[in-house]
Amino acid sequence: MNLNPERIANRERLILTGLYLAKYDSIGVRRLGFRSFAEAYNVIGYALGSQPASIKNYRDEFDPLFPNQRKGWHKRPIRAYCLRVFEEYKTLDIELFTGLIKSFAGYDENLWSETQASEEREGAASGFAKRLITGLAAENYFESVQPSLAEFQGFELENTTRLGCGYDFRLHTAEHDRFLAVEVKGLRQVTGGLSFTPREYEAATAMRNRFYLFVVKNSQKSPFHEIFPDPLSGRLEFTRSERTIVQVSWLARV
Image (tube, rainbow, N blue to C red; front, side, top):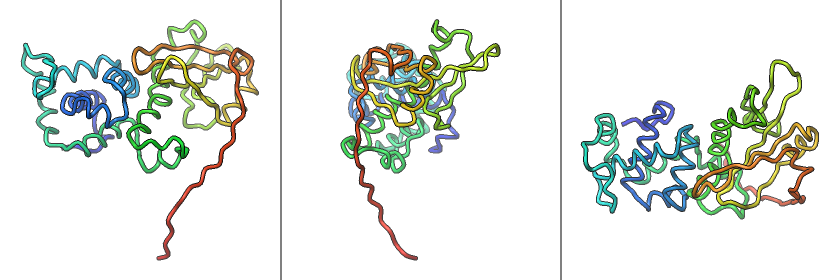
């Protein structure tokens, strides 16, 4: 049994997610911090760079093997490559299986918990879901639709999420030296609050009409997006908020 996420191909990650949701049903959905199967499909699907329907189809593939209320694809035998995955991972308990699914999105509970504000500490499950919704899933959604967006057609896309420059993507063309910057945010519902870090706010202030806020909304049902050019000058109202976070650590001498 392979429990190293870096050595599991992306299609197998999708298959394993479908197996997990078929086996653990609504309990598994809640263990991952989601409110519905639809939200799990949408968020994990985009987080893994795939379509949400892929995970649903794999869940349906495995449904006949478990005593849930769904029939799944019961009119045909399970496909051979899915059966191989099932046989390899069928004995995995819910704790290890949940951790494996989370690891596909780069989740490290110890690392992520360090950056959670105290009021956001709702547990590892909800933290996992929230960070996917506001981060990786939303970013991959943007990458998937960017070529079809009139505002960004003809631009070459560069992912800058790990560079700490105050935005997630840089878009540029060979004809122009100046580039566009896109900061991506995600919301669980159709409306909600979002925040800029100091670095993001500084970038939006400096770049003005070359800075775009791209918001992916309604991840819990049917995701769609809204684009805000120069968000600090538009219809959004940003208010300054300050908070102090106390971080506790345990020290020892050796």
